[in-house]
Image (cartoon, rainbow, N blue to C red; front, side):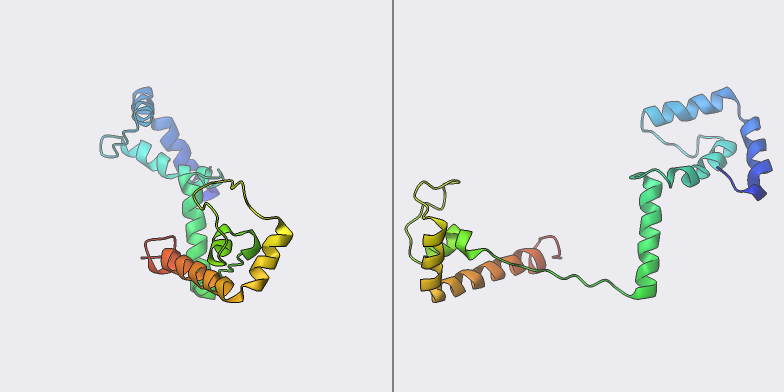
Length: 156
Protein backbone atom coordinates (compact mmCIF):
# COMPACT_ATOMS: atom_id res chain seq x y z
CA UNK A 1 0.00 0.00 0.00
CA UNK A 2 1.48 3.27 -1.07
CA UNK A 3 0.05 6.62 -2.00
CA UNK A 4 -0.07 7.77 -5.61
CA UNK A 5 2.92 10.19 -5.52
CA UNK A 6 5.22 7.45 -4.21
CA UNK A 7 3.90 4.59 -6.32
CA UNK A 8 6.61 4.74 -9.01
CA UNK A 9 9.40 5.03 -6.43
CA UNK A 10 8.00 2.06 -4.45
CA UNK A 11 7.61 0.00 -7.61
CA UNK A 12 11.25 0.70 -8.50
CA UNK A 13 12.35 -0.34 -5.00
CA UNK A 14 10.43 -3.61 -5.27
CA UNK A 15 11.95 -4.44 -8.63
CA UNK A 16 15.46 -3.63 -7.36
CA UNK A 17 15.24 -6.28 -4.61
CA UNK A 18 16.90 -9.61 -5.11
CA UNK A 19 15.93 -12.97 -3.63
CA UNK A 20 18.81 -12.97 -1.13
CA UNK A 21 17.62 -9.72 0.47
CA UNK A 22 14.11 -11.09 0.88
CA UNK A 23 15.37 -14.42 2.29
CA UNK A 24 17.58 -12.59 4.79
CA UNK A 25 14.63 -10.52 6.05
CA UNK A 26 12.32 -13.53 6.27
CA UNK A 27 14.93 -15.54 8.20
CA UNK A 28 15.37 -12.62 10.59
CA UNK A 29 11.61 -12.43 11.18
CA UNK A 30 11.40 -16.19 11.79
CA UNK A 31 14.16 -16.00 14.39
CA UNK A 32 12.75 -12.76 15.90
CA UNK A 33 16.07 -11.11 15.18
CA UNK A 34 15.48 -7.84 13.40
CA UNK A 35 18.79 -6.23 12.50
CA UNK A 36 18.18 -3.00 10.63
CA UNK A 37 21.84 -2.28 9.95
CA UNK A 38 22.46 -5.54 8.10
CA UNK A 39 19.51 -5.11 5.73
CA UNK A 40 19.74 -3.32 2.43
CA UNK A 41 18.39 0.25 2.26
CA UNK A 42 15.73 -0.84 -0.25
CA UNK A 43 14.36 -3.40 2.23
CA UNK A 44 14.32 -0.84 5.05
CA UNK A 45 12.49 1.65 2.86
CA UNK A 46 9.88 -0.93 1.88
CA UNK A 47 9.40 -2.16 5.45
CA UNK A 48 8.68 1.40 6.53
CA UNK A 49 5.67 1.19 4.18
CA UNK A 50 4.30 -1.82 6.10
CA UNK A 51 2.84 0.52 8.72
CA UNK A 52 0.22 1.56 6.23
CA UNK A 53 -0.90 -2.05 5.78
CA UNK A 54 -0.49 -3.15 9.40
CA UNK A 55 -2.49 -0.19 10.69
CA UNK A 56 -5.70 -1.90 9.59
CA UNK A 57 -4.91 -5.19 11.38
CA UNK A 58 -6.54 -5.19 14.82
CA UNK A 59 -4.01 -5.71 17.61
CA UNK A 60 -0.91 -5.15 15.47
CA UNK A 61 1.85 -2.83 16.64
CA UNK A 62 0.88 -0.35 13.95
CA UNK A 63 -2.78 -0.46 15.00
CA UNK A 64 -1.84 0.20 18.63
CA UNK A 65 0.43 3.04 17.54
CA UNK A 66 -2.39 4.53 15.49
CA UNK A 67 -4.81 4.30 18.44
CA UNK A 68 -2.22 5.81 20.78
CA UNK A 69 -1.82 8.76 18.40
CA UNK A 70 -5.60 9.20 18.32
CA UNK A 71 -5.71 9.17 22.13
CA UNK A 72 -2.93 11.77 22.30
CA UNK A 73 -4.87 13.93 19.83
CA UNK A 74 -8.05 13.61 21.89
CA UNK A 75 -6.18 14.53 25.08
CA UNK A 76 -4.69 17.57 23.34
CA UNK A 77 -8.09 18.60 21.98
CA UNK A 78 -10.43 17.66 24.85
CA UNK A 79 -8.12 17.58 27.89
CA UNK A 80 -7.16 14.74 30.19
CA UNK A 81 -9.84 12.12 30.77
CA UNK A 82 -11.64 11.82 34.09
CA UNK A 83 -12.04 8.46 35.72
CA UNK A 84 -15.22 7.76 37.63
CA UNK A 85 -15.26 4.81 39.96
CA UNK A 86 -18.58 3.59 41.30
CA UNK A 87 -18.45 1.18 44.20
CA UNK A 88 -21.75 -0.43 45.06
CA UNK A 89 -21.19 -3.10 47.70
CA UNK A 90 -23.94 -5.66 48.19
CA UNK A 91 -23.81 -5.78 51.96
CA UNK A 92 -26.58 -8.38 52.15
CA UNK A 93 -24.46 -10.84 50.16
CA UNK A 94 -21.19 -10.05 51.94
CA UNK A 95 -19.97 -12.50 54.55
CA UNK A 96 -17.66 -9.81 55.92
CA UNK A 97 -20.67 -7.56 56.64
CA UNK A 98 -22.34 -10.45 58.44
CA UNK A 99 -19.12 -11.02 60.39
CA UNK A 100 -19.10 -7.35 61.46
CA UNK A 101 -22.73 -7.80 62.56
CA UNK A 102 -21.64 -10.54 64.95
CA UNK A 103 -22.66 -13.62 62.97
CA UNK A 104 -20.25 -16.50 63.50
CA UNK A 105 -19.12 -17.50 59.99
CA UNK A 106 -16.09 -19.29 58.62
CA UNK A 107 -14.65 -16.57 56.36
CA UNK A 108 -12.03 -18.93 54.96
CA UNK A 109 -14.59 -21.30 53.43
CA UNK A 110 -15.38 -20.47 49.81
CA UNK A 111 -18.95 -21.74 50.07
CA UNK A 112 -20.09 -21.64 53.70
CA UNK A 113 -22.49 -24.31 54.92
CA UNK A 114 -24.27 -22.22 57.55
CA UNK A 115 -25.11 -19.07 55.55
CA UNK A 116 -28.53 -17.65 56.49
CA UNK A 117 -31.20 -17.15 53.83
CA UNK A 118 -31.35 -13.90 51.86
CA UNK A 119 -34.25 -12.60 53.94
CA UNK A 120 -32.45 -13.42 57.20
CA UNK A 121 -29.27 -11.73 55.95
CA UNK A 122 -31.30 -8.60 55.06
CA UNK A 123 -32.81 -8.58 58.56
CA UNK A 124 -29.37 -8.94 60.16
CA UNK A 125 -27.86 -6.11 58.10
CA UNK A 126 -30.87 -3.83 58.73
CA UNK A 127 -30.78 -4.48 62.47
CA UNK A 128 -27.04 -3.67 62.76
CA UNK A 129 -26.56 -0.25 61.08
CA UNK A 130 -23.31 0.56 62.92
CA UNK A 131 -21.62 -2.67 61.86
CA UNK A 132 -22.88 -2.13 58.30
CA UNK A 133 -21.33 1.36 58.32
CA UNK A 134 -18.06 -0.11 59.63
CA UNK A 135 -18.13 -2.69 56.84
CA UNK A 136 -18.75 0.01 54.22
CA UNK A 137 -15.96 2.20 55.63
CA UNK A 138 -13.52 -0.71 55.68
CA UNK A 139 -14.42 -1.74 52.13
CA UNK A 140 -14.04 1.79 50.71
CA UNK A 141 -10.78 2.35 52.62
CA UNK A 142 -9.37 -0.92 51.30
CA UNK A 143 -10.38 -0.16 47.71
CA UNK A 144 -8.89 3.34 47.84
CA UNK A 145 -5.67 2.17 49.50
CA UNK A 146 -5.28 -0.67 47.03
CA UNK A 147 -6.28 0.95 43.75
CA UNK A 148 -5.35 4.60 44.16
CA UNK A 149 -2.82 5.06 46.95
CA UNK A 150 -1.01 1.73 46.82
CA UNK A 151 0.67 -0.24 44.07
CA UNK A 152 -2.66 -1.05 42.42
CA UNK A 153 -4.17 -0.29 39.05
CA UNK A 154 -4.21 3.50 39.46
CA UNK A 155 -1.44 3.81 42.04
CA UNK A 156 2.13 4.99 41.57
